[in-house]
Amino acid sequence: MDFRQYIANFSKEKYGRKYIYLKRTEKLIVIMSAHNQGDNFMSLKTFHDGLNYSLLFLNNPENSWYIDESNSYDKIITEVLNDYEPKNVIFYGSSMSGYSSIFFGFKYNANAFAINPQINLDLTKDIGWDELESNLNNIPCSYVALEKYCYRKWKDSAIYILHGHNDLDVKNVDLLSMAKPDNKKLILQTIDSDLHDNYISNDVNKINDIFNIIYSYRDISISDVGVNKKLKERRKEINQNKENNILDNDVGSINWHDRYEHELPNNIVKFDDIGIYDNNGKLSGCICVYNGYQWELISPKLEGLNLIKEQDFVFEKDEFQFKDNDYFYDKWWSRINVSSNIKGIVNNSELKLNIISVDSKNTYISTSPNKSLIKSDLKKQSRYFTFFMDICVSEGEAYLSLGGRSERGYFHSNSKITRSLYWTKISVSELFSNIDVSHKDSIFCRLFYCSDLKNKIVKIKKPLLIEGYFPHNLIV
Picture 1: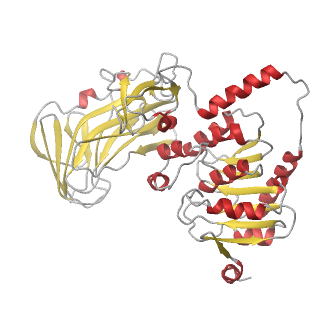
Picture 2: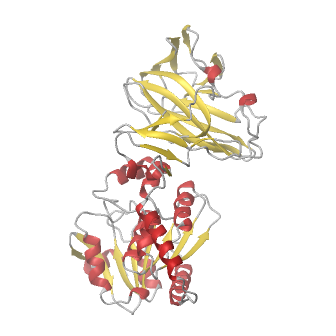
Picture 3: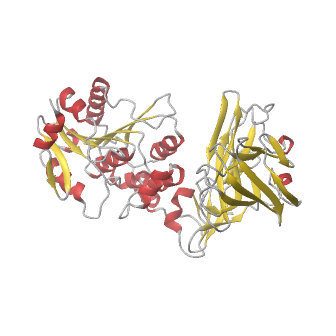
């Protein structure tokens, strides 16, 4: 079958949305296209040819997580679902549409099969890649956090989640896993993969097996045999408070990704999941204040905790030429192609880099902390580190990289790119574990300033490395 012609013949348009609806049986699968699939209908051939269900295909070209001000998707879904019992409907999606499949599964008391879904879009903005953050910022109206929405909406829905070990996926899935609504039918299957991917997109047999599991799980009904009305009412009241995010005290104690709900001028909140490490190896939390635009750190104070304080640019140095693999200032060394021409000068506690010509994106300066200053045993413990630096660029871009060398090889994370003419503090965090402490690059802090191959002036100051986790959008 020519599916391009099939789409042309059978796709419909209503409420400004294109969709394909094929009625076959009393059981319906709603297939929701994933991020960046444009006008395409996800797995159209696979589901059309390989599965004997009624099918509704939806897409979301603007990458809005199926959220829009006109409720166009709601209207189409409501009209189609009039012909089906909720227990016979499964919403299917991956990543962006994984969020939507669970959301609509809850909303219509239907079911969902989601692969690496987002659960909390604010959390996703914090830890996702730049394009994901940009698209989330462009969502035209409000959205819900599924780990809270479920307290009100999880009735009979059977939810099956397939996920890997990518940090974005683990942190999102954990939120729903830890939620405790009145009713909860949740199957979590973890795949030994670090990719954010749809692992079984074209494996129709595995997909059908999972659909059968969901339908069977939905049919299992267990009633409350020992009703204690007072206990049940108290539990429901607690759950309602969790959904509404009511706090137990004035200062509050919440997770960083929930901060948007507390953004009132001069509001002070303690975020439990960030900060330095306490004596028990747990993050201490941070007390922060909202200044009307951003959150600012109040406590803990980071003075005295800088693991690269010795690498600050306190001593002046006359203009010099950068050379490859050369220690140009105390414990800072440079990576540069021999044909590039870059000069530096240190004064007023800042390093100025003058990029006259450059022919490699892999041009950077690097330093490492004095290992004797690190209190934890990184061969046995897993710890976050956060690297900060103040940067300004005359044009183009620059970014930080924080990484190291484990017994399995190199790893690193990059900061957001800065293109600011004005001093801007940027940061990047990375989780260190099983570190090869004997290696020169067991922990490295780097500035990449030629990824755009542009000639420019880059100024840097106040390098700071902290053993702890501090999100990039917190002012410290």
